[in-house]
Length: 197
Image (cartoon, rainbow, N blue to C red; front, side, top):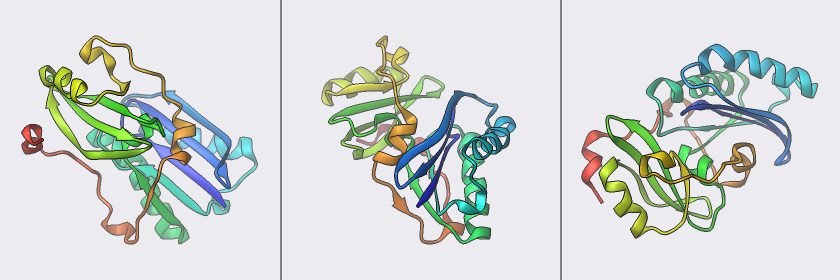
């Protein structure tokens, strides 16, 4: 089973090729607002380095948000076209899962701009409750309610965030299979979610 994992939802571009869940090779680079320029270059280099071909891929796993409006769509569009044309399985994880991995208890905070942040509390790779948008001045209270390792943009709360192993996390966290590839849409959080618990 060859798996291709792709994430372009936030600041990084993460691409990995795996055989039976074990990483063959991958790249995780800072590429904020440059994912569309670099993704095909990096993908082609990855396949060349591993000696694999696109037709060898059995499944594609991507993140479906939250994150950059444009960023999420880059990997998602490529995955949807590829899986539709090649009749391959498409799976998704959330951006929050990618950051937290299988940590026992984790908080992920990602800058949503305009003094807001995407936040989620996760246990062993699963979001507990829901991912939401909070004002930056609400983050401390959220963290106090949910003790755990902090991942993402710790600078929003003047804390240092733990480092993430995106390539490891991609294959470890539970994913969901997309039955109707055409119906898949990015997980954007609505403004009205900002004040819901």
